[in-house]
Length: 268
Image (cartoon, rainbow, N blue to C red):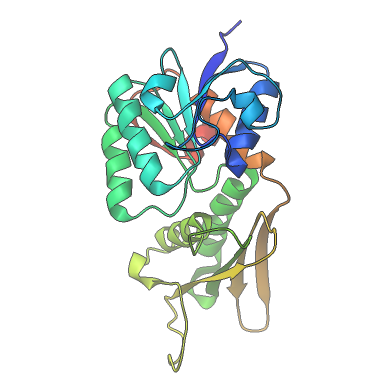
């Protein structure tokens, strides 16, 4: 039998952090070996299980990832771009694989994650859901089959607390479609305001909705003359993101250093 994957969760009291702690606790083949929160957080010093309202897990919540990763096999990080970059540097220094599900990265932050991936394997994806990654793949294939006769827009909706817009998943959808159609990244348009003129045929639009407790919804619209195709993924809970992250955490064990995505995980 394979040994349990000793897992560290960062940001354990966040929405995804709590979900991941619960999933690691309840999933065969995984064991929680560490948990972190930012300096000064009330949960620092508490048992991770108590901090997450899950009962005693006998794992302390600390404010130093360098301390938490001792003996770990993988770190799973759903925090902020700034924190994720810092965590990636620690993982590279400690030679611990990393799974990153944070969103809203700048080009510079992505480059810093890529630097860490030269030392350790890093799985990075704006959406760890198995279903949504299948939608991304299908959307690119459909765009290729339909060709230039269809206008394409991506619409995403998330809860009122989400800080970045458009979502990383919506941008990834647009980027993969643009790549499939051999269009330049500059053709991705994230806003339409005022007198903007007629739509360019090469344009791929990305629009944003925010409100309520929407976990995540993404729809790709293919607008033709006299017909329309809609390809939609709706997330009803965050659990599927966590399950995808655990799948990535198991997959990344023993991999060579490099920057991987969920397409790599699902293709294995």
